[in-house]
Length: 210
Length: 145
Image: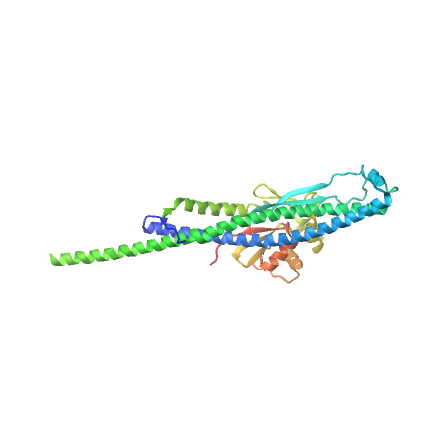
């Protein structure tokens, strides 16, 4: 697609204005490129971490369920349920945000997930229950971490798409448009000079004839 | 030919908004590592009114790298300046302890020039991986052609 010319009066003042606009557009383009490069780097890092966190969470879930089945097998389901029913305690999660190159991403941190006293009777239960509880608490931490990474990944992806559109608009529409208009103005000025020269020559000839 | 005004306005507003949004997250005041470790929820207030939360694990990692006196001197979040060159960034280094921390985190000798530590993209990625919440980007609008 040929660059679109901007509607301006062919004057030197307009040319100066266009030059300023081009300089501004170049600055914006530089900033947008920097931002895009940083966002891409952060996106790749977050994606890598997200994959690792997911794998870790699956491993932890598998270990936790294994430990829970061992505990259930040792104590029996009814006895285990009786012990665990009164031990439910809410976990605290510190939720905030952090900003990556203009993108506000969530930040979660589970506090006090690993407890020393869990509420069930230490006399009536074995170390199998302790192990299962410990592994389940680790799962909670990983879930919070994965939630943060997944949401950050989505937000970064959306921002990359938006920034890319702006970068392309600048690179392929605005800057070429400004450059083409400046070129058009230069051509106009040259044409005007030529017309002026021809006019002067014609006047000279007329004066000589008179 | 199309009308120039909307384009012109869009450009002006974009630059203004972009710089405002990009640097809106900068902290009003930096806090020392020792102070942050004492807080229950370590955070700093940002220019846009939001709060930036630090991860305790990261703070503890930083504390393990330096001594107690240096913890008082290390101001967080550390600022990484972008926009001078596409392939590099600069960590703003107000105190000597920043140089020590960055050197230990990247596991390489580092020199501070004019209060800036120049690092390259792979090092920047490594630094951000280890210090996610204790570092922040600053976009500089200067253009050096």
